[in-house]
Amino acid sequence: MLQALHAEWQKARRRHDLVLCLTFAVILYLWLGSTAPTGQDELANAYSALLFALPVLNAILMPIVMALIASRLWDMEVKGSTTKLLYTLQSRRSLFAGKALLGTGEVLLMVTLEMAVSILLGRVQGYTEAFPAEPFVYTGICTLAVDVMLFFSELLLMLIFDNPLPALCVGIVGALIGLFSAFMPPLVSYFVPWAYFVPLSCYEIAPWDQATHTVTYGLRPYNWGLLAFTVVLAAALFAAAWRMMRDKEV
Image 1 (cartoon, rainbow, N blue to C red):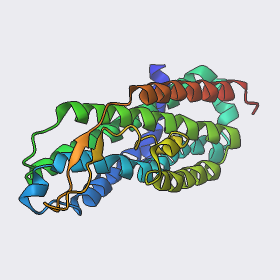
Image 2: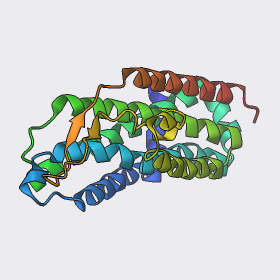
Image 3: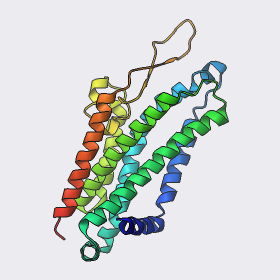
Image 4: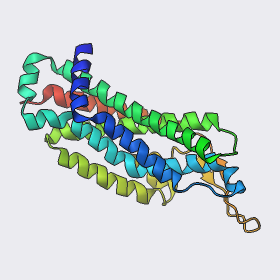
């Protein structure tokens, strides 16, 4: 398995996957930084506002990014017509394990960079709100779970069609649907896996205060049930992708 992972790592270096992860972090920093708080009242709840906005941005960006990662991971074998040759050099189990481990590692790296960007923004922009450690960790776990689920769904599409276009199209359409569902009743988002970032969010906007003309954010109960369902769905998609690679004729 380590040899398979090393081989996939060598391929990733030639594909410049690290550049994709860093580019995402830069885009996220610029996007969130453009909405920097200006007044003292905004700085006082800036972390809450950031953790409220982050799931919406993830619902827009992550379906497309996960489609890119999954398509690049398998597209090299498809374009080079090397699948049959690979199956004579290593077992299908080994090949799938290498790709699954590398893809999950890249997803973990992107989530880590995203959380690091959030901390960096707080330092650079001088947030005065106390750092919400527990909601921060919960948001990171939820983001990782949804990203892994989306990654294996896109990898499954790549294995089915041997073409990156369906995976990319599903990612783009999923991002659009996820964006719209984020502004619809919460029940709707439960039927849109690409938008699970939003119902898993632990922050909500409090009712508008006309007297102070300020926006305040409040914590809401952690959605452990949906998080558990997301993990189960990710495991099911992982198993489906493995069965597809195991039984696929080349």
